[in-house]
Length: 492
Image 1 (cartoon, rainbow, N blue to C red):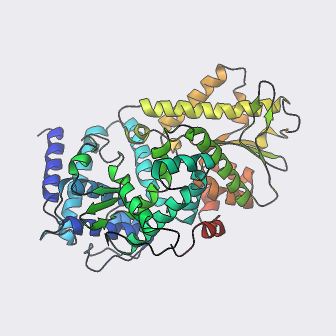
Image 2: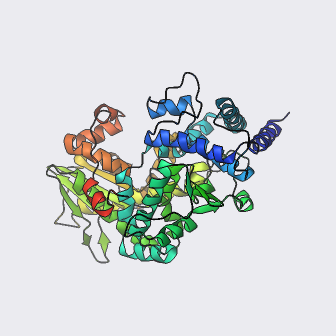
Image 3: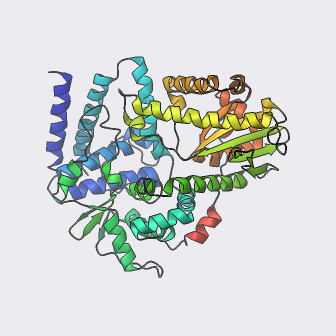
C-alpha cells in the first residue's frame, strides 16, 4: 500500500471511530486536560490517565506523558465535524478509548512526516513550524497578556473600528469575555441564556457575546468547508474553532479549549480588523505607544528613554524609541507585521516565508539608515558615543522564530546585505552594530534582565547563546498588575 493510501485509510478510520463517542464527554475530556495544562486545575477523578502519569508534575512532563494541547485541538475539530450526538454509550473518559484515538491521530502525523520529512533542509524547516505550533501554548495567558492587548486595541481609532465590527468597545468586550471565561473555567457546560451578575455587563451584552463567538454543533457543513487539506499542513493550519471557541447545541454551550476564548478576545481580534480602513496605521501607533510603556516599566535603573525624533527635509524619523545609558545606545523599531499563515504552516512551498523575510530585512535596513544618519551628524542633538556599544532591536508583536531555521537566517542576512549593496551604506555597520529581533513578550521579560545586568552583558550573551545562564532563574515581575486591576475588577 502506498503511503498516500495509508494516510487516507487512517484518516477515514479516525473519522469513522470518532462518530461513536459521546461528543459531550469528548468536550469534557478536552476541557479537563487543557485546563490542567494551562491553568494547573486538577484533572477530575472520572477521567482515566496512564498508570505511570503524575498530573502534579510540570506542564512539559504532562504534555509529553499524556496529551499536548495541539493534539487536543485536532481532536476537538474532527470530533465536532464528525459527530453531533451529545450522548452515546462510548466515552473518551476511559483511557483505553482515548489512547486508541490519540494513537490514530499520531499515526496520521507520523505518516505525513514520513512522506515529507526526508532531506535535512526540510527537517530544519519543520522545527520552525513546530515552534509556531507549540510555543504559543507555553506562553501562559496571564493578566499581563490581557492588559497588553487591551491597551493596543484601546487606541481611539481601533476602539471605534472594533465598536462598529462587534457592537462592543474594547473594555466591554474584554470584560464580557472574561465573565464568560470565568464561567467556563469552572464548568465545561453552561446552560443558556447566561445571566450577568455584574452591574455594568448586561444580559444583552452576554447574549451578544455568545452570538459573536459561538458555533452551532448542528452546522457541520459550515465547518467541513474550512477543514485543511490532507497534506503536510494538516497538523499546523489554523483551527477554525479558534474563531468560534464556544460550541452550542440546543440550550447547552461548551468551551472545550478555554485558552481559545482568551486568544479570541485578545490577539485574535487582529484578524477581524486588519482590513478595516484606518486600522493599520492606528495599530502601528498603538503598538509603538505600548512598547514605550513597557520600556518605562522595565528600565528603571537610570536609563534615558526617548521617543522618535523628526529631522531633515524632506522629513525623516529616527527609530521609534531610543534608549541611552552611559556610552550605550539602543534603537528600537516597532513592527506589528505578523508572519503569514503560510509562513508558519507550509513545508514545501517557501513563497510566503520568503516574502516575510524580505519585509523583515527592509525593517532592519530602515533601522540602520536612521542610525547611519546619526553617525553622520544629521541630528546634532542625538549622538552615538561608540559603535561597539550601539544596538538595533526590531520589536515585533508576535514571535518570528527565524533563527530556529538556519536556511531562513541565511536568507535574512542575504536580503539585508543586498539592501546595503544597493545603497550608499557600508555593510560594516551590520557587524559593528548588531541587530536583534525580539517580540514584545521577550522585551517585557528580558528588559527586566537588562535593567539588572545592562545591555552589553545581555547582547553579548545573546550572541554567544548563553543568555540562559542569567535568565533561567531570574525573577520576572508582572508589569501591569495595578493597571489591570483598575481596568478589570477582580469580581470578573
